[in-house]
Image (tube, rainbow, N blue to C red; front, side, top):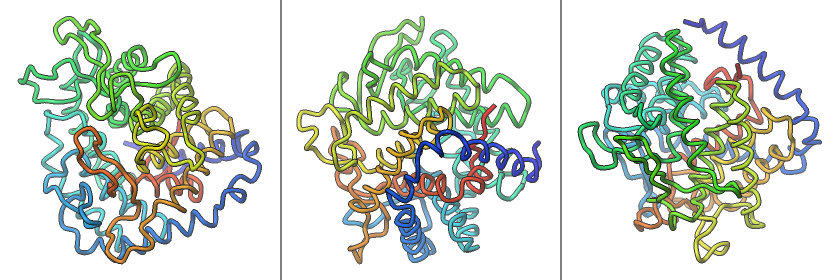
Length: 406
């Protein structure tokens, strides 16, 4: 097991390299041009909102209804984002209240480390338990995250080299269904290999990423939400969607998951093909953005570019672009991330509402199901703060979530 000091030293070394790279120099003062001070003010606003709301939160925020959080008791797929957001608030402010609340919230996820019925264990345990271990050094958080990774790899299909997204392992429905979101759950497997020395976790993550890399990207860099395989043979069936407008469209949050996820698996493996894929997905998304720099919910919906927004896609994408800038040394990705964050800060926050319990508004959860349109979502708040901390406190953030590369 890495010691806290070793993790800190490794993180610091990598971040020095990243922020001193061509990406930073090419940015040419982009922080000033796009308002770094404004981004810090955004983080201050988020922390003030959390300080007022968080002490009364006893479950896991899922979405808002009339600006108030609705909750899941077991965390659904989003449970890791609430303690994760509290950790980000602690990093920004140093307020020990957030550390106390983050640990108490993370503890409520304990039963989920044995859950084999979901692919979302990375979303659940990385921002919460992995971060808790990296900050506190308490063995129980590390051990629980590794157990969650062991549960996740039970969903791996060796015939098709993929992790199935949905359904209990005994349920034949959706047995061959893969979704782009799973790219975000692979880093939990990389963590497990690092911690145990057992290569099987990262090998499965890498195999899944290679399958997704072959199946999802279209020639123009857009991706579908879903790709189906024959679960018995592993043979590809074709693209599909649940969250997007159609199997041929480009659901913006899925595009953001892909950018972030492929960049992360590149950092964990050094496989440059993953970096190429991340760039391809990013270039499409940047070309599809409207002048206001807030993504529509699907870049190819019939009403695009004048359709409803999904600010969560913008905050997730900003994190991925900042990571991509560091990995490639190309400052235009960093500049684009700063424009996204500035746009969200200026046009999507709940500043003028006295009722709102969340930080980011103008999010869309599942447009085809008419579930959560123009609401707030916990992952929008989490990734907003993560992205800002990538700019303002990169060393501290790397200590919490590990931005190092192999």
